[in-house]
Amino acid sequence: MNTKFYVDLEDLYGAHNYHPLDVVITKGKGVWVWDVNNQKYLDFLSAYSAVNQGHCHPTIVKALKNQAEKLTLTSRAFRNDQWPMLAKELSDLTGFDMVLPMNSGAEAVETALKAARMWGYQNKRIPENQAEIIVCSNNFHGRTITIISFTSEDLYKKDFGPFTPGFKMIPFGDIEAFEKAITPNTAAFLVEPIQAEAGIIMPPDGYLKDVKEVCESNNVLMIADEIQTGLGRTGKLFACEHEGVRPDVLIIGKSLGGGCYAVSAVLARREVLGLFTPGSHGSTFGANPLACAAAREALKVTKEEKMIENSAELGDYFINKLKTIKSRHIQEVRGKGLLIGIELKPEAGGARRFCEALEQEGLLCKETHENVIRFAPPLIIKKKELDWSFKRIKKVFKDLK
Ligand SMILES: *Cc1c(COP(=O)(O)O)cnc(C)c1O
Image 1 (cartoon, rainbow, N blue to C red):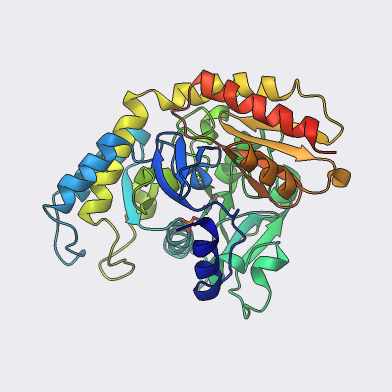
Image 2: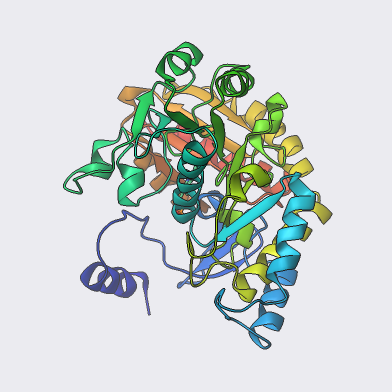
């Protein structure tokens, strides 16, 4: 079966809520994937950083297989022997007291928002239904109706109203705007340490530190959405660590499941997550044994195989290399660790055509918004594979007029 067969089938029967490159992948191993014509590509997106550990990581797959043959789902009506282990391992790894497990990133964001509102009412004594949560413009936190209620992206919102109230938006990176937006009813500030979906937007140096200070002095929870930036992507376990900041609430997902399973979680102090009582929140698949087995092994190999160190070291190496490309199309190269963006000039004709040209060269990348190409290979990538990629990127910038 060729590419066209699958593309036509997908476009006929599948809803068109994505605009994928027309490459039909059938196999993956490490940083490489193969399409249905047995053409090989280097994956430079890693499923939006959900495949940090590489495709079909052997021990993650093994953990998943072993668990699949033993026990897959109990629901939380009963206990299983995997979830307590994952909860403890996550707490040991991160220093947070408690963990609330969910599946998708958006669900974990929703959970964090619930936790923050609950904390606001019970702990801060905010009057009923008055809790406010401050968010940033150009944020990306997922696709539920509540989450898109506070997006600044019209495309994400159009025709999906009415929306959830209780959110206030300020510019990302503007600490004064944040201070000004706080009222006695502010429960939390939700922020991405680097805005990945917005186009790898980095805040000014010291911003996260200032945010944490302002949160502390106003009794407001700092919620960091590290679903994409976390677990080594930026060269530290969490991107907030670049400024020595520990948020009050941390949201993780994506590569927590090792690219094999949807696993997300909210981490916080007991003072916050301890407020949940039986029945106040839940998820049928949250903390299922398969998810927990995958996540446990994903965390283990992230650490043991030094993926975080690799991300830091090779990220620096690659950003510096990209900066040597002389092209009239390039506005800026920026990033941290292996989360890198090339912003093109407005007149460059859009990032999409560059991604399509890179696909022809065997490198799978995705544009984010019109003018940014995101480079985010699996964190297991080697220097020689980056050099291989660099050659192709350089060629495409030379070829495209
Ligand atoms: C991907 C992402 C989400 C949403 O995760 P899903 O699993 O797609 O629901 C939320 N926040 C950030 C920062 C993300 O990158």
